Image 1: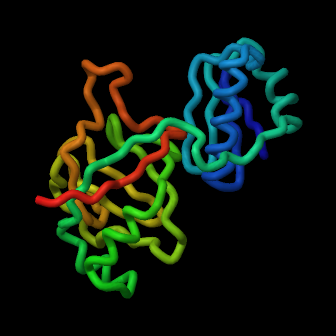
Image 2: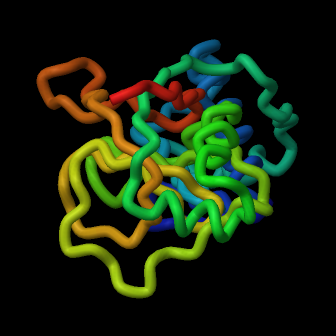
Length: 205
């Protein structure tokens, strides 16, 4: 763990993996709920970092953080969101070829995994989901699409993502869902927050 000062009221915590990010984020949430976490305005996880902003005493927390005991997350921790998914994406055949499996096996493999939202970004409501074994990593498209339909389920590198709205994108599309991931009128507006468990449920039609 490496702790860096950012401005006058923030810390950037660097760790070695997205799993460590998720564990640290969960520990911060536990300490906040228990009232043992120093006051912090915003906690922003990313692929290898966690930003703590709005701290009253960042220097003290910077000294304390390396000594924290941060348990690994276990299966069943966090809320679960199920995503009804039609596995009919435009890149399904290419993904099957890359994985060296029959086309129907892509849906079975993908739906067998319990994913976890590692962090959010790119667009409101877009979560970067981890969980697929490394052998299923997928390269992005060489030329991104100018428009990816809302609800598209895609793969890029080791991540799975669901497009909450139509936008350009280079992820490999394997399916689609009608689930509304981002709704400003809803509280919370997004279904995917860091730490959320996600399962994709195959549906017909």
